[in-house]
Image (tube, rainbow, N blue to C red; front, side, top):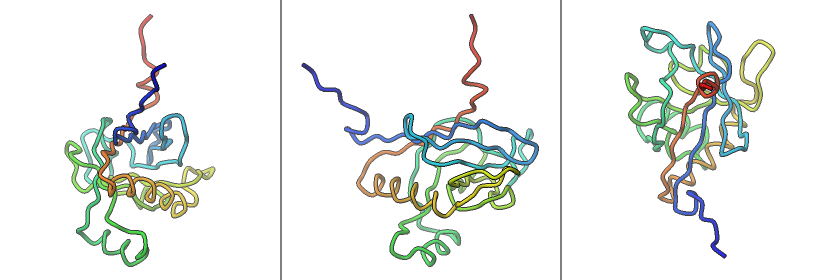
Length: 165
């Protein structure tokens, strides 16, 4: 009998951000590893044409790397000295630069990045962002440091549900 080999067995990990709510001032999503829910996400709303610092990134698959430059890296290195190895940086996002996954609760905290939280309040803000970030960061940064490939698939639930019969 053949044993099953997963992509993770060969050093490939995929995190999915599944957007489920596009509001006027924010985009909410689920952060998943396979079928397992890790946390929630908050991004800027969709805007066309793009408004710098106020537009969610395009759907797509993006490689994650640890970025060890910039003021946000310095801030997190000081705040989490025993844990921080670099910012979770989404690579090669069309029309965007320095897109990170980081701590924050409201659209004012994102500027085009992906915020994470353990829950969502009734008004659409994230809850327990630091807790969710540390959980996700520990897992993902360990994978990267161990030499694994980690991608983030950003998708829209509404787009996924479109099909023809």
